[in-house]
Image (cartoon, rainbow, N blue to C red):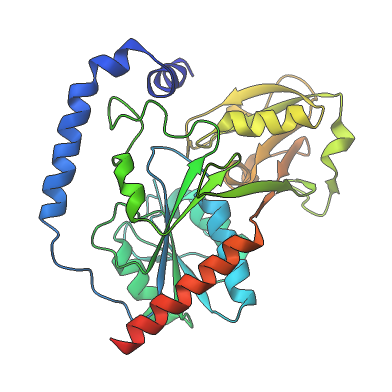
Length: 331
């Protein structure tokens, strides 16, 4: 979409519009300071540790795959995590919403359903993040909460903050909205506990890589194949995620020849968006597949991914979690 391309050039390249909009970026920073001044009272401790996974820029950086990884690893270490999400663009009439594997992504958001399916742990969606955390603590067997997004949610208690950055695009032109992609100034990173880079990592960051699983056919999930079986073939690739080019590049790197179809993040796919006048396979991300299972054909395939992080990250996380948890019990 042309406006997405323009926005990317303004925010991630030396575009003159970024310079012209920079005074508005300073106004935005002033509003952030005023907002923080109105939230002097510490957020209430919900009774269990809370890990917030967020980012400083607008758009996706890999928060959800990291949240899914955290659930798996912390569960293996004996914790009973629940996941609080915003339910972004969900149209539910009331909140909070318990998320099931068969929940409607239109009502509760695509990422919420994806997390519920991948983790088999309690997931609650609510734009009011503290209310989602409270629902998990009150109604489910959870002794730890992972909040997918919420770094800027001042009313939310947090014991550990993890910021995720795109290893290639980084922080763009380093300007705040609307002149650049930053939700907060880069100085905010000084207050987070851990920084995870999706791809190439910098100093003091932990690198997160993606490992592709087998493709599965949307109407027949038991049908699977390796991505390399499509090597050298032309295919349709569609992505309505924060960084669609990352998905397309992954396909090219495996030797596929994708015809790329880009959509805005969280875009509500329609039948006409995924059906084409040919018989080429159509590949999509998990987040997109969830939204079009009801009208997909046997030409439509989903590529699941798993996040991988170094052992040193897990050790550091567990060390921080023990310190913060012990500190809360002693308080």
